[in-house]
Length: 162
Image 1 (cartoon, rainbow, N blue to C red):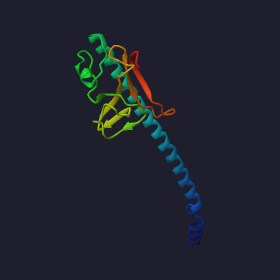
Image 2 (image 1 turned 180 degrees about the vertical axis):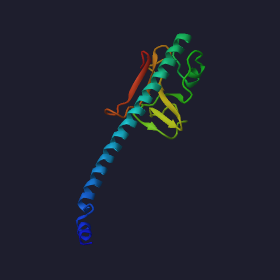
Image 3 (image 1 turned 45 degrees about the horizontal axis):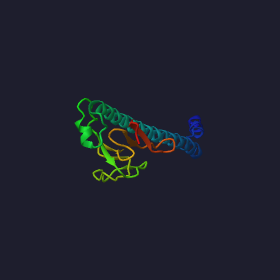
Image 4 (image 1 turned 90 degrees about the vertical axis):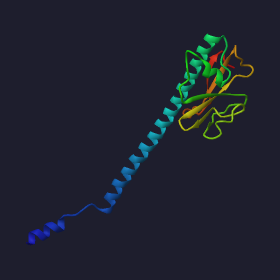
């Protein structure tokens, strides 16, 4: 019996310091994971913007081959017979100075918009520049944002661009 009591006195749990050290290590690992995930999702969004702009560019080039001019309106893009834009992509010509902005409201206000992309649900509307020095025979600029590596406004050109 006496041996059992001595054994119980020698059995100890973790100290509060040991538990705090383990909690701090877990918190550091969680913080690293969250930062890595945020960076990955930002790069994925940038890749999606780039892929969408390339799709718009290809449809514009096909339209030029079929019609001898570049599409200068959303209706022209819709009228392309061989190549079509993906269902969730819309183009919006602008005369405004496009910035590296992604808007989430007022996607319907087009013509002088300054956003590069406007998202509404799963639909993305991309700004394109078709005014001077661009024209239907010269080319168009398709704008898309980039948030990684400085966040500069990117441009995909169909034809000579602007």
